[in-house]
Length: 94
Figure (cartoon, rainbow, N blue to C red):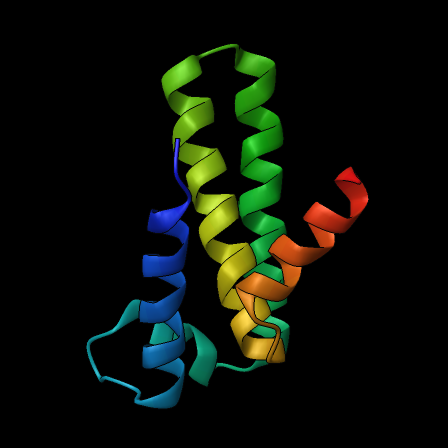
């Protein structure tokens, strides 16, 4: 399984941060500020926790995707590149 989709999605998130679009969910979320981005990530993490208790695999997958997506939005908001996080994971694996 490749991680190319993560790179693709992160590139779109960075593009929406750098060139906001009026109809973009990401642009709108980032425009609301760091506190809202953090709040939204927390909300999604909570929803994943609830889904995990349900043992409904499709619901867990859906909520996990939301968490990963909102982590990437948070990283972009803070100016952290996805490859920096991947490198930290590689470093921890050694």
